[in-house]
Length: 322
Image (cartoon, rainbow, N blue to C red):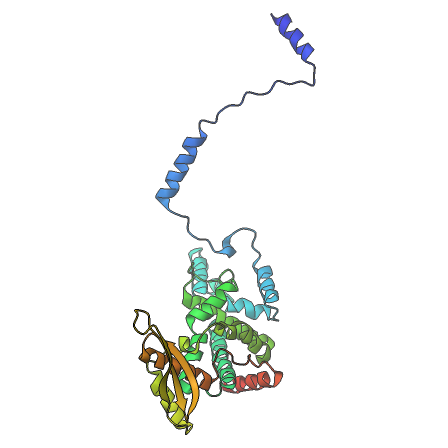
């Protein structure tokens, strides 16, 4: 028998091999099922900040951040802008737990509070002067509402999160609160102000904050409950006759979906026209259309003026205000 097997092997030749028998991994399915059960009981893993993950060079990421923005930062100031006070407290407490004295445990770092204050002050002053030049006919209440929108936490955090500021921020909390993200973004503006001056900082705000008004209506920022009263007040200040509402067009009056067009006439001239499901709603919409035209916020308004003269004057006003 052994001689027969030896003969078969020699006949098969050195280049031919028998195919291996495919075995079933019976342990795999119970193992995967146990892992899925464990993951369901423990829940999703806690998020880990990017700077604590492997293959992360913090200095290189800071330099790359400034290059992505196409801005010239002082690297030390930019690093300070990302440091929050909670991070300093945690690091000092960790060093004290290791047995270091208070002097050795103290970090030679500064938090971003001063930079955030400078950035907030410059942002408010620059946007105020820029909006006053862009919308000179807008009253103080509307200007304040527009400024509050551009400097609101929602808008600042939206811009900061799209710039991936959270990945570089040094803070105790993660995920970070909106207050921390807003403060860090304002600190970056303050660092840019000290590094490159007010002109480049103004261009930065012009590129990232002012475009947040695109696609927005004036009354999305400014809540006006009685537009007709506001229109009468503005016309009285300009010594223009009071508006007279007249129905210009109507359709489907006897149906469940009526449509009315009301026009506002001043001195026998049509100044605005608006639609509505009722006459009162159409009259209010016509008043809003008239206010948009009066304040220079109409849909067909001229594009924003980015001429150097206007920008230089805005920068000078922001410097003097800050």
